[in-house]
Length: 76
Figure 1 (cartoon, rainbow, N blue to C red):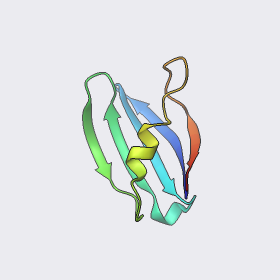
Figure 2: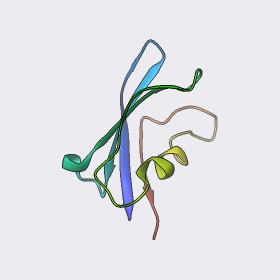
Figure 3: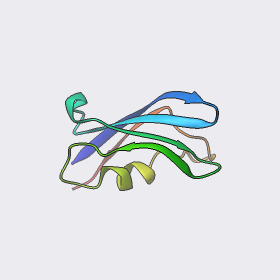
Figure 4: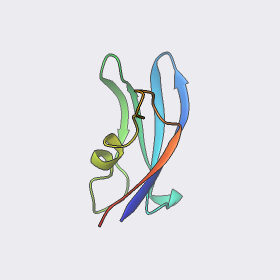
């Protein structure tokens, strides 16, 4: 199993990510949130039988604490 994600935009401190299970754009989910305040503006779960958001949350922060512009998470 795998998912890919990409940062679409940052507006007023809110990060807009799209999440693609198995790389399928048709099944994408959307997460718009402010990482400082922990406020979630929009959450649309991807069309997937597995926990995409949990796997995304484990990967989108880089080693230096920066938020990645894109990435991929794979597991089995």
